[in-house]
Length: 258
Image 1 (cartoon, one colour):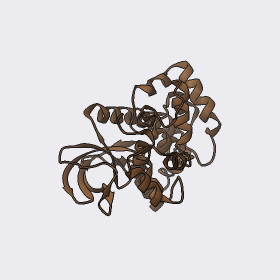
Image 2 (cartoon, one colour; image 1 turned 90 degrees about the vertical axis):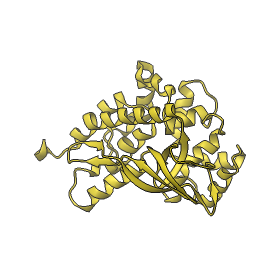
Image 3 (cartoon, helix red, strand yellow; image 1 turned 30 degrees about the horizontal axis):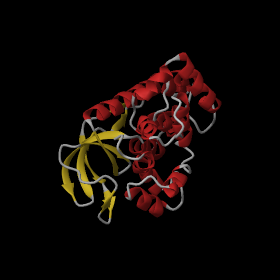
Image 4 (cartoon, one colour; image 1 turned 90 degrees about the horizontal axis):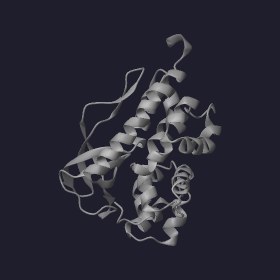
């Protein structure tokens, strides 16, 4: 992963929500085209800075480790996938940095973050999805909104998959979906889904093969993962899921259900 220029690596993971209109620049076509060149260029860097949701995390990881460039590939990989760069945030200095950056969001209406959760969280994409975005707070509702919340949480998180079949601009991959039993979020049994690798024959990743470990975001394949990277993604995501189950969801539960 480190051989890929940081802005290109960032774009591979950021393009799917950008295509859906959730974040980043309005011109998702140019964003994709610039990323597909595989080059670190000023246009791609400028467009990457327009992801207001991701940039604070990249900046925080970079500042904590004395890295001048938030789009350094080590920083980008730590945010989307996870790496040892995140372990610094388990120290008192790291927790203080997290609180300084995100403490003002505790208790805000469109945020699921609680003080106990913030004290245990890391600047990983799973933190943004499960604690900062509003969808976790909707799970305790009844009806279609709760179902939609679970779907968005599942698709928006970066999840691991294993390619089982390749066909043109898509692959079939095995992955475990996020489940909700009314009390806790968990990973369910492995399912097979169709995910996209490119547009009109243009891929951001190059050739994939059956058996490849991959990272998935929305309906896209974002990266080919080594075994170590796959383990990192699963480990840091599991940590944040545990924090949410223990320190966020109980606080959001209606008083009548406690």
